[in-house]
Image 1 (cartoon, rainbow, N blue to C red):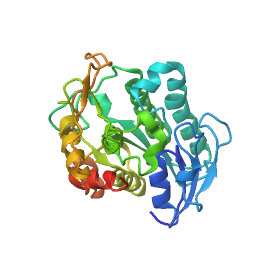
Image 2 (image 1 turned 60 degrees about the horizontal axis):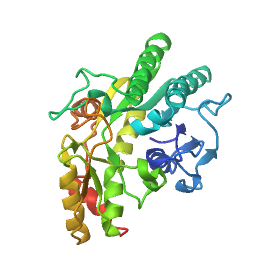
Image 3 (image 1 turned 135 degrees about the vertical axis):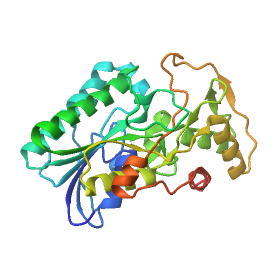
Length: 304
């Protein structure tokens, strides 16, 4: 993207700051973030930063494109305070998109989640049946339904990206997420400090781990192409937690065994396996993942 005026909500957080910093050399980038899951320190000084909530009035939505990444981004966050989860993830989404629409912006890209597919060992395409077994998943599906409404009723381009297990490691902007960070970041920090990484169950659960650089490239392309509808963003591969521990040990030159504990999340709602079919966004934009798990793990471990 080039020469556009862009708003990134949640732009001081993990994925948002990576996106804002990628876009700012060639665009006028504004970030709105209440710093509950991020920090302005993540941002280039060329980014215009507003310490505000997506629930506020009079947001800086007089832009060409909105990238709406602000969210309570995990099951645990929603279970702690379900009403806040709904306000931030659903009301905040509607508030931002409506203000943008009134200011003349007709293009929005927002974060949905791969969790809506439940457990899938085969690559899940966008037409796969989805469900809401948790408050977090319900909030993301509510965004998708409101996205359909704004697209149909107001002829806006509204693209929801179902992101698959995005990671970077504590050497990057993911640091601020702490215990809510991707397991790769948590496991790497533990192993590097000679602590056993805590693994739920037997470690055979799998994720389609997607490096943040691939994720933000997909987000940018969705905005540049003014996509509409729902799109997967993932590698198409999946790896078990046990594999990740082994790769981290190999890369760090360590031999730290994991600690297996009972899964505190009920088995009826725990997503055991994820894997993306990202051919739809590939066909629309030419995007494909470039960072395989070995290269991603090397990048995560480099600061250690």
